Amino acid sequence: MELQKIYGPEKETAMTRQEMKVNKERMFLKELIDKMFEIAGHDVKFEDVEGRTDEWYQQYTMTEEQNKEWREWGTKYIKKKKRHYSKIASREMAWLDLYCGLKIENK
Image 1: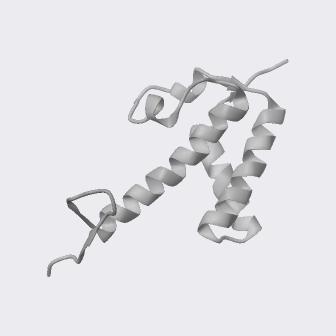
Image 2: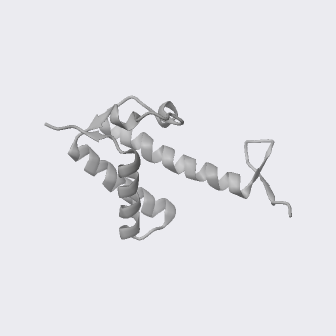
């Protein structure tokens, strides 16, 4: 059984539905990570840390207030993009913060 091919608007090559889904998730994660670095005041982008196997999230810090701001923004973003309820969106954001959130600096 052959997968149905869908052509991207700017690409000449065909993408399968699975490849499109993976790309959509990657772009979703990119937006969240870029916003995290923006709120924390670091001049770093998702592309700079993508694929790194070291603990890059421990090399940068953010304050508790910045973390709270990022989590609130991310929850709203998840609700909008994925159409989740508030509770599910905040849970997904908590998992993302646990997985790749920046280290909280102590004052």
